[in-house]
Image (cartoon, rainbow, N blue to C red; front, side):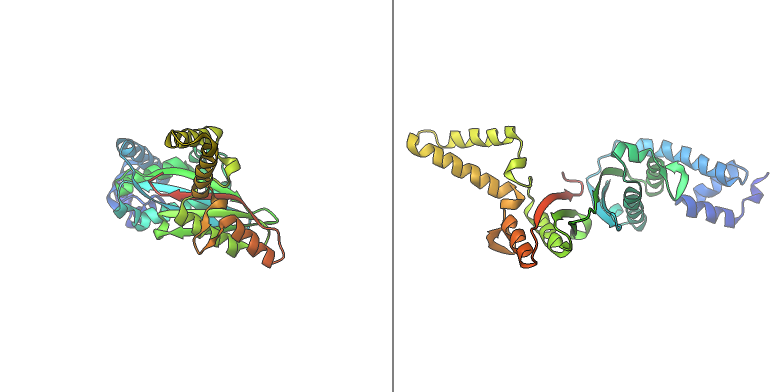
Length: 284
């Protein structure tokens, strides 16, 4: 077959299927004598070669996005080199497609997810889909992390996105029908940046380090008050880094844990925080 068989309609179809520029699509179809599948294979190979040159570039910008179904909340962070690309429609479309794939497939790990077939085009993997986007946009694109929150019976999940996807938080509560309360707590998580759910979840080595720091600070104090000072400093650390003990941003007369319990009681329920997530794109 000659290249004359490569019609504008074929080029348009290839562009729609791959997102690659018209010129590259025409070249791929010429090389494959108008065979669509061979042209896609040609672009994949070219995309992988092009993407490999950009893989080492730093990705400091990005977005965190969530997608909910009746059964799960999926979260994904996708990073790029510049904020300009993050705002690009094709990049945003890619992010939406990726997080929907996470919700659909509920992968065990990011590594496994990248090797799975892309449901909208099973001829390519998720990672090959990413590589095609790199070829199209011209920047390094990385799927940095993914997470899935099952929507279990008797639980409520709240999601809050801040600064256009720069920060996203998810909160899971024990207690059904409390999605609004979960979202309120998720807003607090986005603003207050807790590191742990409660003191019980803090690794022992972290607590010991805080004790050592506090002990240095109280050297020379009378022995009978050192223990009280140390415990006070440790409690202050808990209040700062543990979600349940932080002062609630909308009412600092109560802790977040107290606020959740109080709101649950007003609805006749025993509600508590089970789990939370806070991701900042490209920063943590």
